[in-house]
Image (tube, rainbow, N blue to C red; front, side, top):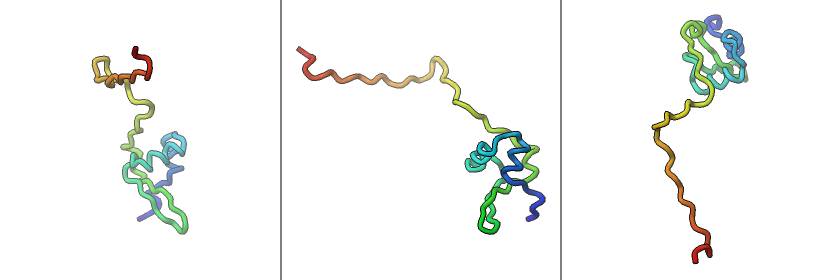
Length: 87
């Protein structure tokens, strides 16, 4: 394995113009293809193949889209009657 063929998470973050914590999350979630953790001395660093940049698609961010109007709704929950309220 030649180290020149790989980049660190910090280098990858700079090249994709994204904050390091976001890239670290992508790496933990397996969203960066070919990335792996490598132990060097007493440290572990992420190794990302250099050629991953040409095919990398940025993961979608943000909240999920709303359901369509006709979509399934949550069932209504009936409230229990209070004790002593019935005559």
